[in-house]
Image 1 (cartoon, rainbow, N blue to C red):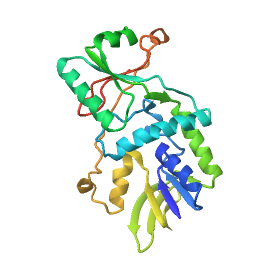
Image 2 (image 1 turned 90 degrees about the horizontal axis):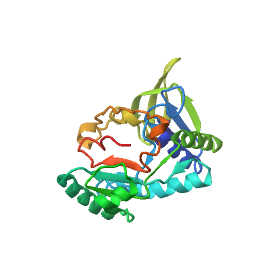
Image 3 (image 1 turned 135 degrees about the vertical axis):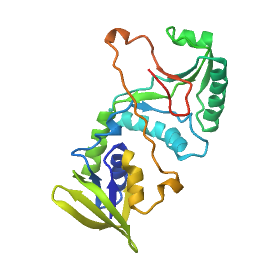
Image 4 (image 1 turned 180 degrees about the vertical axis):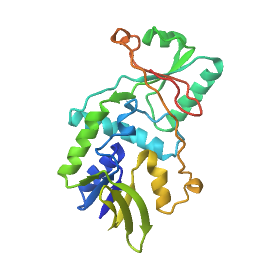
Length: 257
């Protein structure tokens, strides 16, 4: 009935929800296990929904999803910390950008934002040097690996089936269903499904293209940016008490702690 391509956090959460209502949910994953790519290699931040356009799907998912995710963690003992985030401005121009970001966040429905002066910022974070800050109290971090394991086990309990080591290599639209071509260690085979959900993460534009979508025209083309992580020794543990982000650049959120 439903084929979900990708067993990252989006594919797992989708399978978990759909399996409550429907039978015949299959999750196809090219790796040997779930959550081996972006879902387990990230900052584990629960974002408030500040950065994005007011009417965007990203904003809606951040604002509504943030509350739902905290509730899920509370119900199922998934570790998290709602420690808050401060976006800092290092110049007058960045302070102006910060004020615009504050207004954007308010439009998006993030109602707990606070603009901080240099003095107010110093009281909260004595080791941070900046002209101003934007505090987002409801931002936080969570244990993404435990979340992945929880969603996987819940989806399986509800009847979802997972097929690992299986790569989707073709999708053909038929009258009332899709023909999905897959490759595994036994070779290439195919099956049909009434619904196909693309949760392929960094490969989602390739999957969309297989389904006949012009990814350039649709705005689905992905442009990868490589990030790096550095682990500090425990003696720096209390240097800051919150997530510290720079004023965002066009290409990303910048270096954060």
